Image 1 (tube, rainbow, N blue to C red):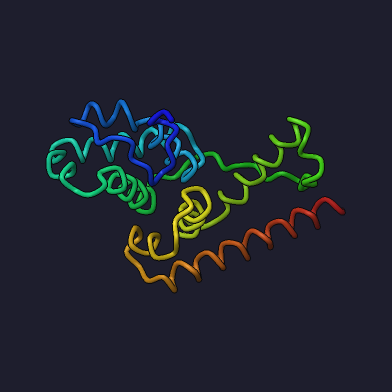
Image 2 (image 1 turned 135 degrees about the horizontal axis):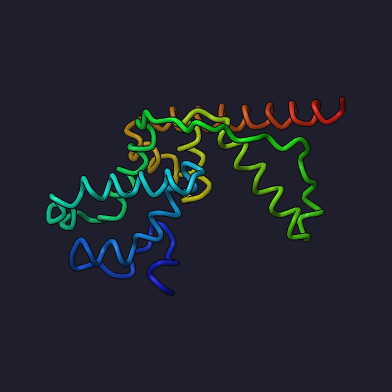
Length: 178
């Protein structure tokens, strides 16, 4: 398996230096940031800013058990604290595609777009919890450690996020009936 395709928790080899780390894991970090924020340019900014902060102290980072996990944590925290907002909002899809119709490529694109819309409608902390749980497949305890909170907070944020997404889906369905 190529190091770039390795799951979030897998570490096929420990990079020798900062440049090696960026070359070998940069793509995976960008994908992670993209799923977290939903914007390719913002994802690049997040990763670039975190890596720029890590560079001067990279030797201290590499002695940790998992340098990549440390960098991912920094990306999540940077995303949660980022004050800059996008000027343009995302449009909401009017109708939810039925799962049975996902065999068609355009249906898969619509379903993916709708998921982005739902995630974009969540507060940042709730979105981070869902990304860490469902995209990175982390347990509540790991998420709590990453976000520096309790497991009960992770569970309540996830429950609130999923409830909000269900409400948004219901609103979309109601808007399509009119």
